[in-house]
Length: 279
Image (cartoon, rainbow, N blue to C red; front, side):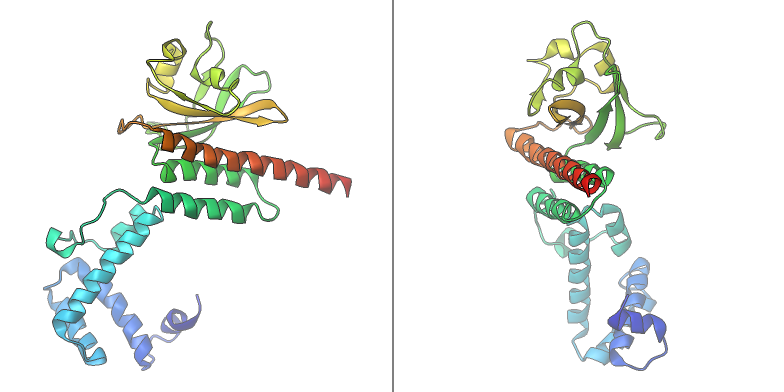
């Protein structure tokens, strides 16, 4: 950390007015836990009034507005857990600005796509790329459960590599789907698709086998195969099997866009590897 905040940490007893404001800001954030009418909060606000010369009520209103804004920004970046530490107080409806309670999916998509592009701008880790792609689908497309699986060398099983949103009793237990259903199943069928498919019970009943039902459940889902040199290496699965919200065409293409980033990344990675071996 540099600048003003760093100086406040390194020189806590400084008389610099700006550093006093930083220290006071920390005390106010702690005082919020005890309530706006608590004695410690009143003391903080009185000191802030002396430093700024602003009206007492105006100061309190500004602080509350900044807290709400900080929680909103944390939510946009998916830091919902962090937002709990910004404010422990439950804001009353009169203190909040009415807005869409749903996160801005397009903003989240844009932010994560930018991060993916930056990650691929030089040498990069493929595992990190897929983590970012799954995060984009999970948060940016608002999917409940997202899963990246690799096909085993003998092509008899698909094995979990990365998963988000799965409510497992044992977090160390990996998801496996086997290619032993006589008429195929949802995931192994998807490996033969060129660009992914939107599965649902009505149109694809036979693919929701007992194995699929027991492992994934019977939910409409998007499944995108991941190919390398025309051969399937794995897939990305996602659904809304927890909240059971309907999927739509816009969701499908948004998820597909993230999968395409993974495909582009794999192509770049193989090109980089070939060039390094030839050097």
